[in-house]
Structures are given as C-alpha cells and as structure tokens.
Image (cartoon, rainbow, N blue to C red; front, side, top):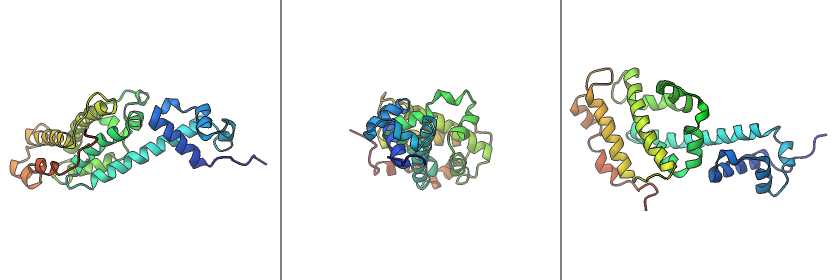
Length: 219
C-alpha cells in the first residue's frame, strides 16, 4: 500500500508556482519545495513521480493565467488593442511568468509567423479580433498582428526586465499609432483602409478614452 500523501497535488503545484513568481522557474527544486512546505522533499514524490511533472504543471498554470489576461483584452471595445495591453500588463504584473512563457530560448529558432502560434494558444482568437472588424483577409490580419506583437513584445520585455516603465496612456497611444499606420500604409498585402473607416471604427478617438483608464503600475 503506497504511503499516504502529506500534501495535496494542488498544494505542491501552487507552492512551485509561487517559487516561480518570486524567484524564477529555474529555482524550482525538490529541496526548495520541501522547505516551502515545511517538510523534506520525500513527501512530494508520493504525489508526483519526478520534478518534470511539477514543472509541467507550473507551465500549465502560467498559460492559464496568461489566457485570463487575453480573455479580458478580447472583451474590450477595440479587441486588438486590448490584447496588446493585456500582453504588456501580464509582463508588468507577472514578470517571471512572462519571461517563462515568452522569453524562453528553449523554444528553438523559428520565423515570426511560426513562433506566434507556437507560443500563444490564443493566436487564432487574437487574429480574428484584427481580421473581422476591419474586413481584412487572414494574410493581412496575420501581417498586422506580427507587427503589433513585435512592438508589444519589445515594450513588454522592457517592462518585465525593469528596463523602463510606461503608463496605460503611453501604451495605448503607441499601439494605436502603430495600428493606424499599418492600416493606412497599404503595405500589408492589400489596399489601404480609408481614413473614414478608421474614424468610424473608433481608432481616431481612442486617445481620449485612454485618459479615463487607470495607469498600469504607474508611480
């Protein structure tokens, strides 16, 4: 008869997640887990076979948490912008988890059109938020999203590593400017989007709306 587990599966996972949030994914060890749980490492392995299983669960939790940010972003009036802001907010509020999911060199070298679906399971929903409201083809939406992600990732990476800080208004204005420029440039594999379409979609008025949104971690 196997020994009775001293800790539940969820207690171990949440403790490993807490270690990751505070100190980084690489700090998850059997010894550190045991110390946090007030025990030796032995009871952990009555629940999990090895540390790889625990780390896989932490990855799952990190993805689930990021998905919640994306879901909230997609519910915004301008979903494409909401997702970009959600991505950066995740980096600000969960820097260790952001680095785990989006700054991990172990994903291997890939083209940008390959890496987005690989690292983000919400890719199709995000693409739709760009494609549908503006009547774009999938290829056009994909190209715009690649540009937006590259720009958003740069801001998010700077925030996650503490290199610099942005307010919500600054983030909103920058993402809006990039998006408008892409739509109006005609360089996304199709015709330019008329200026009046940008206005009726709410793009031109978003700067005023940004002033009513609370800053993200603003001092």
